[in-house]
Image (tube, rainbow, N blue to C red; front, side):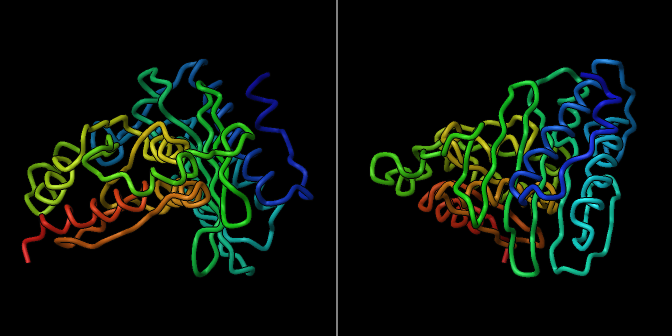
Length: 276
């Protein structure tokens, strides 16, 4: 398998949306991995930990090219600048490499992610973690799967996971250190963080959300997520039977996912940090 193969590979337009999404994130992720193996340099975006590489751009360009050919009427929005106005009312949202800081530093905890939304909500999500060979897929028309097997964590034990309190769950989260200097952000985050049984901060929201869907992580919360960081995982968690929510506190939007009870308690904890 070579980088050239990926850059030239054309996908079949007759694939259904789920098949196409799965193929796109798998190919984009493999392309990024091969480029990293060949050597990469990075550019800083907003901070030393917010970086972009040539692999981000190449993977997004590949997905953009395939979508314009396979779904010419759909819109496209990408983290690295892709923007196509469609006519169908549907938009594909691309995150070519989520967890670029991890990716650049040799960690396996990064992924390629993709979502399809319409004017009302997200329809499907796909997340592929190449070095772990994990592909999560799910949406409104298909239950959540991991590598083709149905994810059942929210259905096990009679759905007990949806009623498990936050205090019994580990919570995955992310907050940049500079935001901890802002009490309007730090207070809600601290309130939620201290309400969970444990904290995990791995650096890829989509990888986290895939693991919330399959039961490896209890719940997740984060502020100020752009659509490409939120919609793929949101679709998959919901397709797995979990809950998602958003709330605006102190001028910031907070995003949550997990069991029904944990998400409700996360919202309550975040709201306790409001200054109003």
